[in-house]
Image 1 (tube, rainbow, N blue to C red):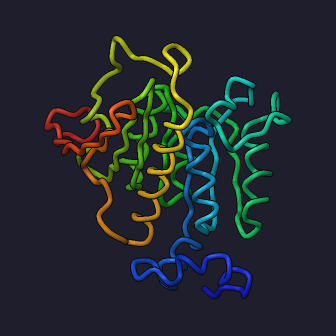
Image 2: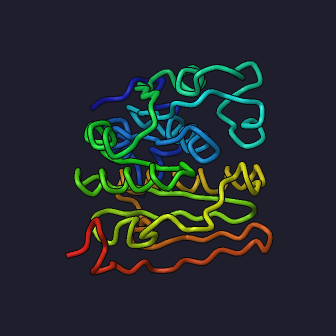
Length: 245
C-alpha cells in the first residue's frame, strides 16, 4: 500500500516515529474502525483517528445534533444543530482528511443488529452512555473476535479499557448498575470528554500499529478534579454470562 506525496507530508510526524513508521502508517490506512456513539467521546476519538490516517471509519449513531451537545462534542458546529450526527460528522471528518472513507450507520446498536454491523470492522470504539448498547457491542465484539476500546465518563471522572477475548466488558460490569448515571442527569465537564476520547483514539492507534502496550485487560481511571490517574487490572469472571466457561 503506497502513499501519495500529499499523504507522506500529512503523516510525516508518524512516519518518523520509530514505533509507527511506514509499516504502522500502512496498517492505519488499511484499518476499518467503527466508532459507536458520535457524542462526547466519539467526537474527539473520530477526529484523531481521521487525522491519524485510519483508512475507513464507521460511525454508528441515530441521534441528531442539539445545542446542549456542543459543550463537549467538538466534532460539530452550531450550524449543525438539528442535523443527523453521522451526516454532519462525515462532512467535518472528510474536511479534516480527504483520504478518509466514512461509512455511516444511523441506528442504535442492540442485540439484534450489533453483530452484523461490527463484523465488517477490525476494531470497535464504544463511547455510548447506555448500558444496553454497551453490552450488545461487547457481546458482538466477543462473538466476532474484534478488539473493543471502551470509554466512559461522568461529572469529573473518566475511564478507558481495552477488551479482546477474556476478560470482556461484562467481566467489569456484569449487569446494569441500579444507580447508573448519564451525563444528561449528572453533568460532565466538557474538556474531560476530550481527554478520555483522545485516550481511546490513542489506544486504537496502538492496537492497530502494535506500538507499546495497550490497556488490554486493564482500566485507566482518570480523576480530573485531583489531576490523578491510576490503572487497575480487570479479572476474568469465570461466571461471566458472555465469556465465562
